[in-house]
Image (cartoon, rainbow, N blue to C red):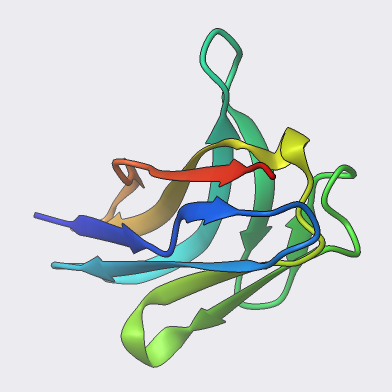
Length: 118
């Protein structure tokens, strides 16, 4: 059973910073990609950033402010969020795309709340 444990959410003032972490554990043969998505109640979940072994991808709304990184030895992905804006307020979900037993799988974390408010 693969598990994702997210941490780092919270309340921050506009212009502040937060760092999210997501650690994957369990039987994983190959990790294809890890990433972060976010969702505001009543809206669709949207991509924030993803990372593979060779590429990173960001939503236009976070480019230049957020940085995604990965520690392969720890199967952990991070999201450094700087210059936060009230519109960044959302539940942030970790996403893992991986191979196990010759099958591709997708796993979601439970989410961590980020609130940007003065």
